[in-house]
Image (cartoon, rainbow, N blue to C red):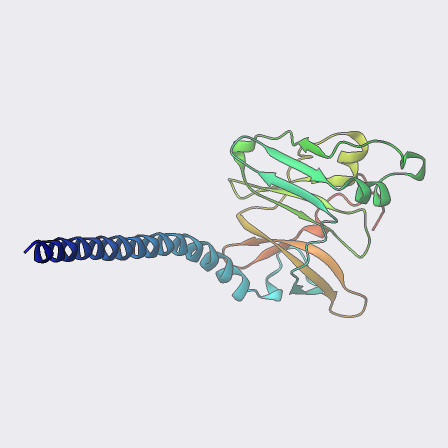
Length: 224
C-alpha cells in the first residue's frame, strides 16, 4: 500500500514538473519569437528606406552636375576618423597616428594630440552625421551634418584639427530636402579619371554632389 502511494506521488511530481517545463519552454520561445519579430520590424523599416534610395539610384539625377556619371561606393574614406551622435552631444574622434601622418607638418609630429572632441552645434537640430573624403588624395575629409529641415552643414576636418575649431562651418547653400548621405565615385562622361565624392540624396532619388559645393581651397590641406 505504501509502495502504491509512493508511486502515485512520484507520478504526480513528474507530471507537474513536465507541465512546468512545457509551459516554460513554450512561453519562452513565443516571447523570444515575439521579441525577434519586433526587432526585425524596426530593422526592416530602416532597411526598406535605405534600399528604396539605393535601388532607385539613377546617375542622371544629379541636381548640380551634368558632366559626370556616378557609381555608388561602399568605401567612406574616413581614414580612421569617427563621429558619434547621441541624445546629449556629437563627438568627433580620430586615431593619433593617422592624424600625425596625414594632417600635421613634420615639425609637429611629436605633438601630443587629444583624441576626442565635442562638436559645437545645436545637436537637437541634427538628424544624422557622415564622414567622407573627396577627390583622389588625403586632406579633403569632411564631417557632414544632416539637419532636421533637410539642409546640410559641414566641418572640414583638416581645418578643425589644425585650429582646434570643432564646429559646424555653416550651411551648404542651395542644398535642401536631403534624407541620406551616400559614398560614390564620379567618372567624367568625356575623359578623365574618377574621383571619390559624397552624395546628398533626396527622397525622390535626386542628389547633390557635395564635392562641387564645399569651399575648395579655404579650409583643406590641398587644393583640388
